[in-house]
Image (cartoon, rainbow, N blue to C red; front, side, top):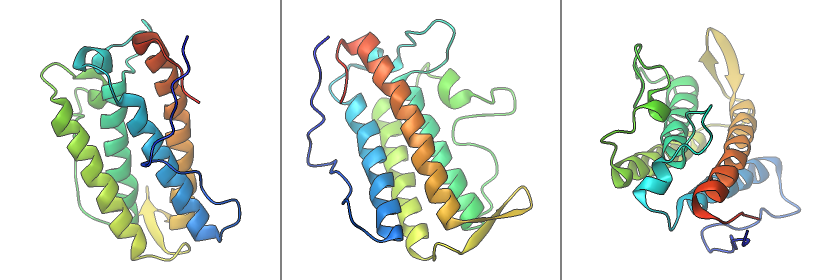
Length: 173
């Protein structure tokens, strides 16, 4: 398989020496950009493909899922916004962001993900790392949210790399 270069001005390596907050923000941006690069240059059918028969995962679904995750952790948990329900899921379809792709419009869903990334950045900028929101009645710090988001993106970027290889014939760095 050819190795795709992920050299792109939208993604830069985080600095080796940085303060805690700057490092957390840089790694989160790195992983956001990695997901974006994984979906570049593919057709709608390739982005919607679920090449692993036992999984609902697709590249399109992963972008929708990460929009849900951004919204949940920053707007709902940290900022305390009352935002009931999901962007894509319902009680009848708890995995709707992954499952309900018929009629999904890529450009709209990508714009939604970008929107929630922007909102997340704005919310985080108003808080210190030790500021807390509430999840299931328990306090959770912005520091914890940043670490969780880095983990969430890193895990799903691994999925995206495998899916990209299966549908697009290339592997990432």
